[in-house]
Structure formats: structure tokens, C-alpha cells
Image 1 (cartoon, rainbow, N blue to C red):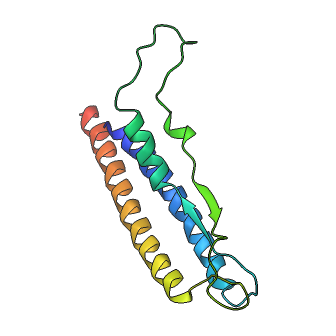
Image 2 (cartoon, rainbow, N blue to C red):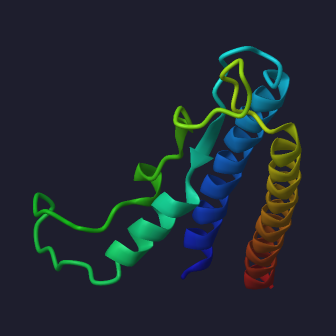
Image 3 (cartoon, rainbow, N blue to C red):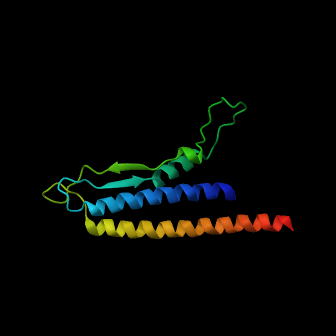
Length: 133
């Protein structure tokens, strides 16, 4: 994977993790709301499926030919609601302990991805700077 492709991928990951952070925070805020159903974000599964399907790309010789390769910009996170479970008598299904653990995991993952993105930009900057000499 080229450096620019990995930067684009990390950008998408950061966007998805930021969205997940908002969704998890909303779940925590509504932990005591009767009838509230927790939400979550699906992105990693979509990305993995896309990468598996794009292993063998079709050869195209014209811009109007159909391609089976999706662009990174076409992959978007999906917010979904988990309606099928109920944790309490008031039909709320938010487990505050689970949400806090998920929020912590997501925050750590976001920070690691941001660090990797920063290193990728440092490599790019070094390559540009060295090229001027």
C-alpha cells in the first residue's frame, strides 16, 4: 500500500472513530432514558469486506467500464440501532459499563491511528525536504 493510500485509509478510520465516539457518548448520556436503544457504528467490517472483495481487480480499458474496485471515498461508516435487546424493564438496552469500556477502547484506537497518521506525514515531509537538497 502506497503512503498516500495509507494516509487516506487512516483519515477514514479517524472519521469513523470520531463518529463512534459521538455515538457511544450519546448512549452513555441516554443510559437512564426509558425506551432508548443503543447505537453503534459499523466501519471496520465494511472496510475489511471491501478489501477482501478488491483482491482481484477487473481490468478496464475505458473510463466507462465497470470496475469492482471501490474507492476509499466510497467507504462510509454506518450508524445502526440495536433494537433486538432489552437490558431493563423500561426497554432501555444500554449497559453503562460496556459503553464506558467501548468508549475507552475507541479513544485509544483513535489516538494510535492519529499517531500513525502523524508519522506518515513526517515521512512525507522528510521525503519532500530531502528531495530539495
